Image 1 (cartoon, rainbow, N blue to C red):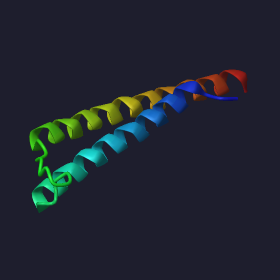
Image 2: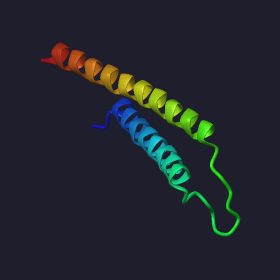
Image 3: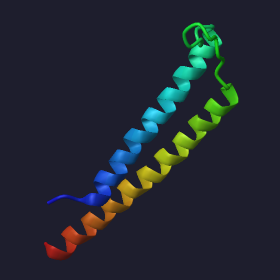
Length: 82
């Protein structure tokens, strides 16, 4: 039996983790002076990356709520049928 809500919540958590990690990596590269892309030397917009980190946190919070609700619903269903 597949519980789609749990799978969706876990997928959301994984995506938000990747989003936060990517933004953190970009900020770290910028502040350490290694943010150049090849020879162009383009700089990372730190403010944008900080916003991406915050959005990733909000996505993780929402996904955690989905997982919690799915868990509670599954628990209720188990209690009804046992």
